[in-house]
Image (cartoon, rainbow, N blue to C red; front, side):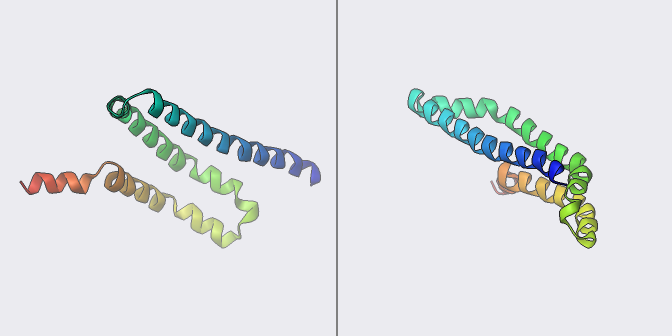
Length: 119
């Protein structure tokens, strides 16, 4: 039992170190970009990157939906059976909420519809 916990702890420690490091790298990159480029250049770069960012979000949502059963099965040792079953069944509800959040908050579909309806 103790031998199996050591690799898990190493992976958790590695994830705990990598995630803040990646976030810090992104923040540092944005800070450098803001100091070296003008606001118009930054806005143009973000506008050019929007299709790629959309593709990235879609890929992440798809990976979550496809990998949901595997993820829930990996959490099984820490979950009671009832919670495990509930989480397995919540897969498509989570997917629908992710799509709804993407459409409303990120893509602004309601605002676009209002612009079309109200001149």
